[in-house]
Length: 97
Image (cartoon, rainbow, N blue to C red; front, side, top):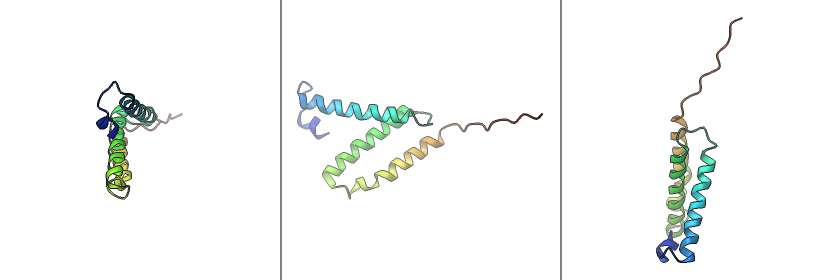
């Protein structure tokens, strides 16, 4: 985030490297969330990317013991939300013989 603010010109290598890094992180979250049994993996990937960015920014400014210390609880709540949104699978039916 700081790199983009300090090097706002998209033609600069530092700017492009920051974009590439953020894109890679978001794509990786997308890869991971598609492996989960959730209804909206792309939305979850977006949310995790936002948390990642916010956690990194807050840690740089306020330290890891500040707001970033609550990141695990936030991610857990979001994962719980997404897993509750998944339609429950029906149990297998038994055949009577």
